[in-house]
Image 1 (spheres, rainbow, N blue to C red):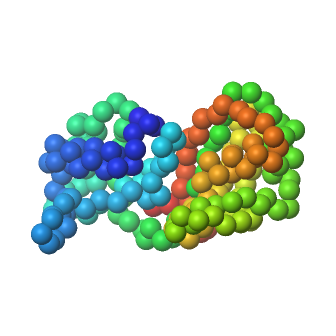
Image 2 (image 1 turned 90 degrees about the vertical axis):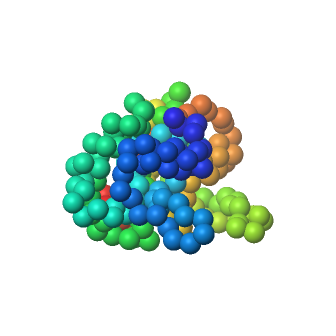
Length: 197
């Protein structure tokens, strides 16, 4: 499932919502479609353990428990819906995301030296297609290594979203090594470092 693109995941959710007969709100206008929104879309190749889907139910008698049950009944084994809550925060309140990076080998000295830097300068692609130099060190809230597993908490959201792929590519470039790894996003936080709901 980690190789399913965000666009294909949107298509999957559209079909799933229709198949499960969820009383979801549809957008108005000429090209009506079911409204739902993923919080901080997951990058291709990443696994996710705390993914958030925002949707609007139009039947006040339709419970959160029924929503979860109906979605799981029609879903596939690799996509499980855990719980449904009334929204507390707006999407713009998302501030951080936590990732587990699992390396196939241990590179403790190089990784620890990299994250000990006061500045980590790299190039980031701009919205206009160019590149600019940025210091990503202030965007890394936590970097903790245990054996071959690296826990990263990075800024997330529209303004300062830092993708772990950029962090890792910069690590490999500055420390001059390559490694096989997998990425799992384990949590999304608000500005107070509380799980986003």
